[in-house]
Image (tube, rainbow over all chains, first blue to last red; front, side, top):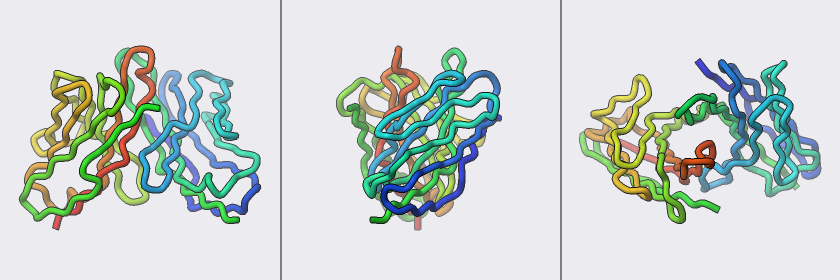
Length: 114
Length: 117
């Protein structure tokens, strides 16, 4: 079945440090890939997505590139801020008529310290 | 942006009682709603998918008679945990999709933490 594996946290970084959260997936076909972010006390929010190979999703300074050859969708940000502290979830949605179910990774907690 | 609310945010109940959790889309019509369960340090596990006006589709291993889902309107879905037991204690999260060209986008509620004593 489909699965998503992301690096275990927690990750603690100093402000303005470079962030990478690794995510790899297993799925048949050509899934769409997502990164969701969950701030404390809030629901998951879509951060970015990519729907086909070599697509780059970007938002709020975060980027991730759909790499089919390595089945990866690593999340990166060049300079993190304290406000980026949250839990980040990598997810996939397998394409197919009427199929819109998300498969999530376990989440990676990021703490950014001043 | 689209907002999804859940009520209650936290509930404690005695073993054997039933608990109802509401999921509402506040500013859009949700043709499809999803219910997830999340254990500590685990990923969200899809429990069921519901389309407005039709029966929910449950994932393998999820007891449909225990987790009753109703999606009676385009803005409300409910999850009822019947005869709850301590092993049902968990974090329950709903999401909603407006369908059509936006079907791939799900908007998530903040979750409901259930503790069964």
